[in-house]
Every structure is written in C-alpha cells, then in structure tokens.
Image (cartoon, each protein chain N blue to C red):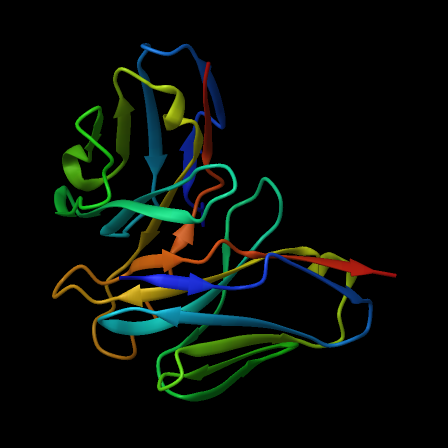
Length: 118
Length: 113
C-alpha cells in the first residue's frame, strides 16, 4: 500500500512568487492534515480536511495560504505571494475514520515538501 | 495555552536504555503520541497513550500520567538505527477536530557505539 506522497520534495523560489504543494493521502483516508515546521521550531498544525470539507483551518498563517481538496482525494496548498518567513518543511498527513473500536487516531505522514524562499 | 516540553538532545550507548521525557500543558487533552523521525524522512508513529499507565510495544514503551501532565518514551536495547528525533505530540479535542496534534520541538537522540 502506498503511503502519503508529497510533491515537490524541495522547492526554491524567490520572494513574491507562487508555489503549489501537492499531497496524495493514503487511499481511503478521509482525514487530511497540513502541518509546517519552520527551522528550529516545532511542527505546527495548519488545517484539517474531512473529505473535501475544511474541518479546521485555525492554523493557517494568513490569506496568502490557500488549501484545497477538490473531490476529497489529493490536496494542494498554495502560497501566493511567498514571503521569506514561509520557508520551512510542509508536512501532509492522513488518517481514516474507524467504525467502532478504539481510535488511536494514528496519523500517517508524508516526507514533507521543503520550501525555501529567497 | 498549549505547551509541550522535551529535551532538545540526548546521547546514549548502543545496548543501553534511554528515557525521553515530555511534559505538557493543554486543554481538551485527548491522547499523547510519540513519533520517530529520521532526518529527511516522514515522522512515523511509535505509540499512543490516552489512559494513565505504561504501554509496551517491543523495545519501546510509553508512559502517561494525566494528572502530572507527563509522559516518557523508554527505548531498550538501543541500536544505532534508533538515532533519530523523537517527537512528543498531544491531541487536543476541539469538539469535532480530533487529531489536531500539538507537537513538541523533538528530542534528537544520538546512539553511540
């Protein structure tokens, strides 16, 4: 079974440009999350999709960030225009809803997309 | 507010035992996770505690005390491949948005021969 895949693995852009990151969750996972790790700091929550709906976007830094999950499959995270402080590693994670039984809520993470804004 | 503390770095010897501590302050506590992350790779799930006590899984064990806001990850019979960053994360329940994890900065463990 394929894990969570993210593209690109590394992107280097100039301030003011646009970048779109893509995440393909594990097939069948309704929950999709975006997290970000800025250098030297902890991984921070950005937002959560349940299928195509935004469940919680309280962690989105500002309106330069736009996340979509059309059709409830893959998701994109667009940064426009990018600023220097947007540099970091953007992680995507997915999990599935469990019908009955204990819900460990285990998140499966992708390897991340490293964004460098110059 | 939400706060998670864990040591930044630790060093241990191959074959030994190491304990990585994590303290947290959060509202709506709904479970504590430990993840392992090798450099440049995805964080991978190690353990989950929601009730007080010890959860054992092979060489790894995790303990939780909710009243003290404290957890530890215990790694036994250390191997070189255990050198990685260990992330403590608390799940906070927001009335629907489960699995919103709050992470510590991670503990970088170096296992020496």
